[in-house]
Image (cartoon, rainbow, N blue to C red; front, side, top):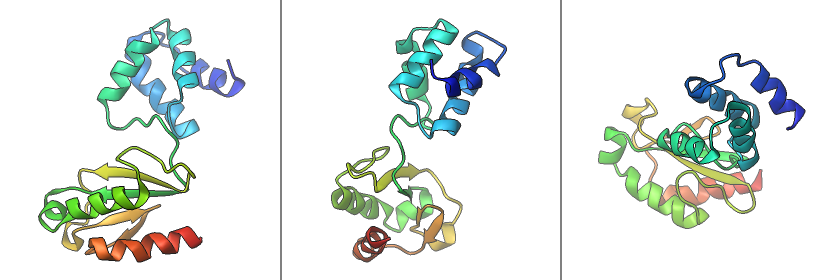
Length: 152
């Protein structure tokens, strides 16, 4: 077991399935995602089968199983964004980057996440890249935005 995860796990004194979610949250906060190795180490530590941990973790959309890209794109799919065309924005991004929600491009440059609401309804549809918001987005605007990030 790696020292980093051993230290993190040792901070959790309750050793049962009730501590699993907070423990996974801490692991993800430290490493950015839940790797197979991390899940196996948690499994060993709590004496819970890794299959059960995957079953529980995949139920919650807060957990990631691959690292985020250098540029993390969030696409709002809330009601206002949906009505104003966020599905076409999402579809275009998926085509441009050849990834789906929760995935990262092979080069590690971009990752994609669908959000239920980003709280910017008056600007719909909205995307955010590393926290920078882009408002009233349409599929045509995406190419220039993505090209700018590729140059960074």
